Length: 532
Image (cartoon, rainbow, N blue to C red; front, side):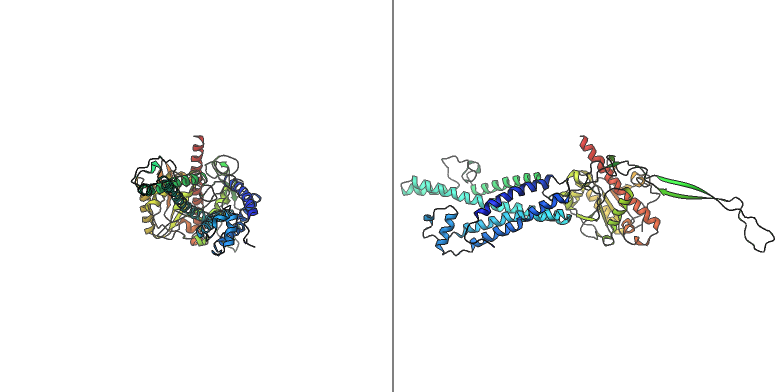
């Protein structure tokens, strides 16, 4: 199955063809992702999957080279001839283990890139968002350090090569022993003056590396240039299947207005009774012509729920494959996953879809605070949900990440007190860390977030753990954080915490309002950026 002595020359050509098609598929995946169809994704996946057996073949071939017997002189000559070397130059020479090790490590390094890419692709194709982001993030860092190792190795080998050339040249030029010693000293010490002006960056005696600590300066220069090039490449190819996370709203439009409440008044006239006063049956005679008004409220959509001028329920700035998603924030110190096992977020998504007719995701998702950095500004989630009843612990870097998300990326925090007065204090302390110059204020019932699309008559809650009023943090009039003090997520969960049906209904309506508000404000921001 795997190669023996024969160098796989034919496979080299086949590999080159494969890599050329692989690059085209990769480009199509990176820049043609807006068309999300199985017939487009899976042929690419099949082609990417071919990298697994191909990598296994080359890894086995490289490993076989390193297992050769060093004393097999004939095999050594054959290998050198295959590699293009002069067979006569290896007479009496043992095999160079380091050369074979370099080839093996090079094959492993290249194969790692292909295997990493195929794993990220299938995590993306199977909609495993957390796995995709994790693989992309760790793979990117691994690729960075792997490339740095190869740069350092290459520069070191090149430096040694030019030092040897310089030493040999000066040895030939000097005829006397004293002059030869001086030449050798100049070739190996940094504090001597070089007569020639070297420009080659692979030569440590290049003039811009200075006259002292030339090797150190050369290494630092190459590492700096490599880091800069890698950073630029990362920014250019940031769409390589997960290095950045993407949130896309459903395309469409609509009005930011209340859902119409149509009230039908039905007049019910009681029957008139003719009563015999001498009857043995005695009962209270109802008032003649008593009229009872029966009110029947019917909720109907008098407009398309959304924002913008597009067709269908959705938002300006959305895409055809976009969906409203429910992202829960992971944090340290507490029970961030409260009520997840009772499908709190998924139930809210289902209700949002039924009430607004917008496309939504099927599953609730989670993201760490650090993962919010992976979202580009114009493809960020309009809101993230945060709940719990214990402690909240965020670092200074995480506080900055949240601040950038709320202000620069126009996001919103939807915070729900899951069950304690301690959590109320933890939320206030966290927001002082995130937005130190902004104080919370009461969100009145006549605020937009409490009126659109559902008019909320009172703040519904399961239990008033943090009071009976919602709090908000505003930036330029926009709510960047909405804090519900009474465990609204418990009402969304299976079983609804045993609260009355009308409370459950109002909790769902408030959830719809908050999610809609965040998406509408984000859509306005996107529209203003497009106009600029």
